[in-house]
Length: 410
Ligand code: GLV
Ligand code: MN
Ligand code: MN
Image (cartoon, rainbow, N blue to C red; front, side):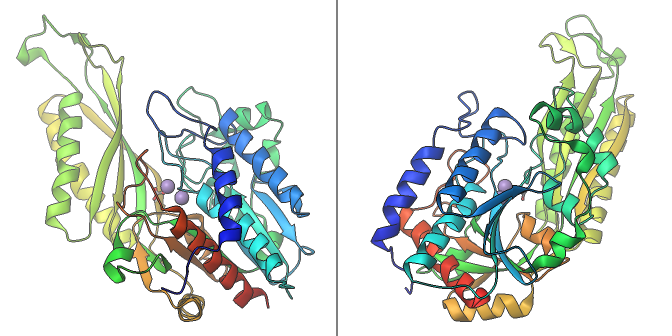
């Protein structure tokens, strides 16, 4: 294995990790809940800004709420690394923060090595990557690249009916500024996002490797199905009189699961269900079911959704319910820049792997040469409190990121 733990970095890694360990703990769900502009997210942002300042990096928040820390003068050809600070509800510690902490420690490593970059290097924390609060994943990078409509984003609301615009104002961020940032995008010469692996493809590619370079991301999207029936009494309503939207919702869950065995490589998941009014002794009047589907390219994913929706509609009709489907997002398959990917894999002497998870690097890849570094995850568990990476592997990731930045910024 090329990468071993550099002892100098391990103290800094452990202390950064310890500082973040208490921020946004979710004692009900387990793990962490950090969502854009909430208290935990603001604490994470303050932590990053302070860490960057300690390193003499100039920080700024861009017009879309993404934080940038610059080593060198912002300008064309910038080599950018970073990730996100938010989490899914009850998420793990590593998804996002590992890439941010690694970006800071990679700068330390480059300075220890006496590296003088010929190009500006920027560290970035993208806002609301998970879409955990407002539903649209990669919100900050989509806005920056012009892939999300600012007016639509301002009107998105969280589960407490707070709009993006209001949430932004509450923390002193002006929501009228959001939108495409072509000058900033034009400055990026290359983007490399380090991330904990969210599966075990790295282990399959090379059981001895702690780090891999990413090649591609499967298409993925989110759909909200609103099923409406008739609210009624759980004890007194006869079977023939029931119009229970939970029945077609159950059919949706099973139809989603069925696609996994019907189509190789396809995944469809319903991870969020909100019956209204949500009483134990109440037949729901309506239910929202959010479905995450990923398969091949966007057209394959959409075709799969059509198939699932057809099954749900049939069940809804049998139950006397109606169905309205709303697409919240759809991201096409992404192939990371082949030259960048292959150059880094050969310079770092690590394997290459694809991923089924979405990332800001996938959004940026449409505009600038982008790729990813993945750090081994022994169980593959992610988006759950059990997500883990060994410290030695994280340190290997930091070294690999420092090497990648050296390659790109020399
Ligand atoms: C984000 O991690 C996603 O893949 O949904
Ligand atoms: Mn994630
Ligand atoms: Mn992530």
